[in-house]
Length: 205
Image (cartoon, rainbow, N blue to C red; front, side, top):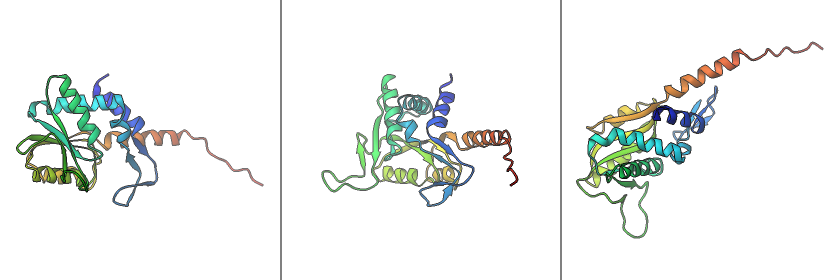
């Protein structure tokens, strides 16, 4: 099976949740009818291997030396790509952007073997508003890293998230999947199931 098709199957089975009613609470505090718990895929052995392969094939021509993003969503993605690249004889160092400064040791926002002037890729698992990705981009720039591309696993296609990211960078911004690929299929499936339900006739008393 094509690696992208197989990864989509895993995401649909393990990470995508859908309800006809808005029951899933988002970080913004709003309720929505669908939700992606991508860590169930990015931390799955097969899912991680496929993500690493697909993103590596995307970024290989960009000639970068680092990959990472805001913890925690970006961490398993960056690690997967780092390992696939190494298996092909290329060194790409993973970096992690903290959400807050630690109170001991070296006080820094970015962990990993990346240095000023390095060309890097910023990754994320799901983009809604683009806020977490943009925070990673800002911290990378403050550490004088050169952003050569942004890759996200899933674009929720809401709040102009991808457009917000594109407004912050002058480089390719790529999403492997978008919401419609999962939501349209889920809505169709649920509609078909509902149409085959037997009518519930109440008995007169």
